[in-house]
Length: 193
Image 1 (cartoon, rainbow, N blue to C red):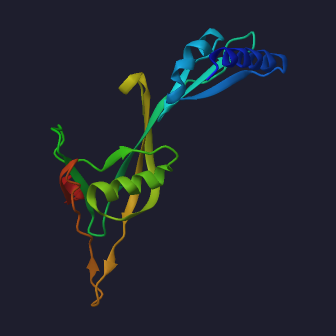
Image 2 (tube, rainbow, N blue to C red):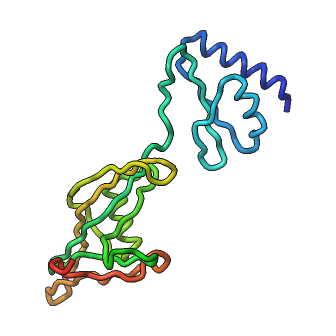
Image 3 (cartoon, rainbow, N blue to C red):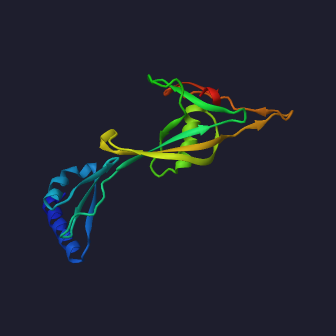
């Protein structure tokens, strides 16, 4: 690999982008080429984020304050309120010591995942109960959490997928705890929650 040639091409690229009036230049660097980052830094490229084995760098090319947004400024969390036809709420008790005896299923949404899908997935993962999105009950924003980031938390109302037996009696699905996170899961009468 010709490192001097890389530096020359990088300098030409930065110059050409400025001459074309580009606002910024982004470069994705695989881990196998991490040794080039020091050279990139000399041309103004700075770390933006890491994704897997790739590092993303950028440089603001205008003579003004950078408009490049920070990366991953928020986590998106979901909570699920699942109430069955017997007026019972689906509750979990986590394995970690928690001040609450019972809580509703919660978790973080995956990158690119819709809020309603994340809530249904978390309930299925933590309790084994399949659900359908009904509505958004509320949300809140909290600042200063892990890595100094903020958290957007959405509480969704979900309906359990209930079935009828051959006699026409309603069957309430039986919850099963996810053993690596959840100690127990139960349908708790709403008035006791």
